[in-house]
Image 1: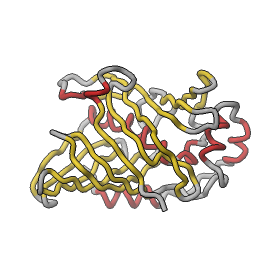
Image 2: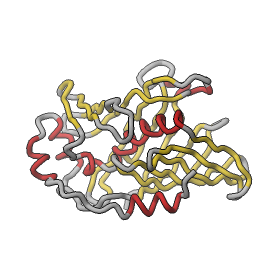
Image 3: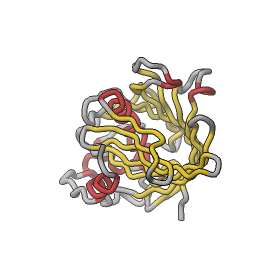
Image 4: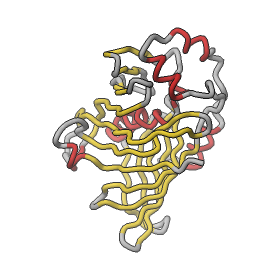
Length: 244
């Protein structure tokens, strides 16, 4: 299992690529171009990462409050570091995808193990999550290795491979290009099912705001069996982003 500081260092120090993103953006057709122009009101920033502070509740045994930091990159992976409260007990840890490895590690008082998972199945699941997390860095989704397609005037898809998963992510957008929701088929075992397989996982975006010159989701919820009645059981994450 990798060290959180090592992951942060690699995401933060990723060298800028040589892609002419302005030229690439000019080639995108509607409604893909509408999505990007809405989310990049000040143009395309050079910054390769954002450190995004979040608060909210997450469903473990029961709904639990958290404070966290998210680092995300659509081609490197992500790191989500958080402090949770289970009763009066603090739980600290992180989930990540990096270097073809996904894992989760949580402890009481930074010492006593609470939950730890890794392996091929966890990595495949983390790769699906990484694509959802990439919605917090829309400027990095302008890339020649990402295939953008329009399903309708209000639905677009993005397909790319970080390590092995090729499932497209579907984005539902408004008339202005604002993001309403997103979903994909993600490898996992929601509800404690022993057998891993594909299930729909998604995010409802309830609010977006400008953060460091880019419009990102700042309030929403996410979970498994997205778009079905089972989502009432599959929802596992509600968040807000602190913006300046």
